[in-house]
Image (cartoon, rainbow, N blue to C red; front, side):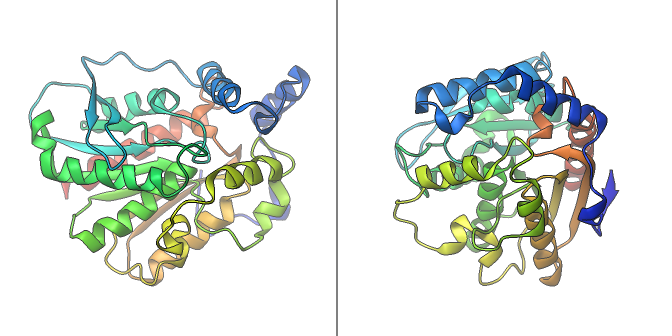
Length: 320
């Protein structure tokens, strides 16, 4: 694991375990997700995460419930390692390009975070595109945060110690929700972002280097955006938080990146933008691994390292 500044891209190579995984995927000959019918694409991704992520940890408290949302009830699941009252809480937003993924595809890490952080983790099934164009998923995510801030005590949660986090598209949502929370006067202890997509127009070096050689390809990213676009987006920065008018006063950030990921440079750009606004940022980049590595724990030891480091960051943020 390395701290900023990032390693030169010319020196970046896949770790042995990452290369072995990519070789195995190539030999298996699975059709790309973007070539599948939508229902099959979602099932394929869910099955893939089930095969590559470590099994969820058994916890004494697992609750399925619903949160009122702008498009109807939002399915939610809570994990905690105890039944204590007034637990701090992380609202976690899953990845999947705003099109695939769900509570089940982030459950493995969420159980680890709940066990190691000493708090609760709540994940939601926000509405997905193309049935629900962006910003429907963002609206659901912010509604869930608002509910935790207003009614979290009904689930034994401390409304004054809330963090928001997510990976990939979920990291985008978490970054935008953190900005919206600042504007709404909802204090957050931390925003935790794994390799977020924070802008669309810039062809960064990492995008050009890794968008053909890893699991997150040009074609897949284009497919995600095509499914997502067309909704009544109110502000550009809701999808591209890098372009928010101001980042001053937003929650402290923890950013986790994969070195061999098309989105790596975007993560560094966002960290820079936050620091320029005076926001505390802790950034960590894992060498030799790829996008979605946090869901590849059966094959990549860096996944467990990332889970543990984020759990530590949550403990520290909630203690402040």
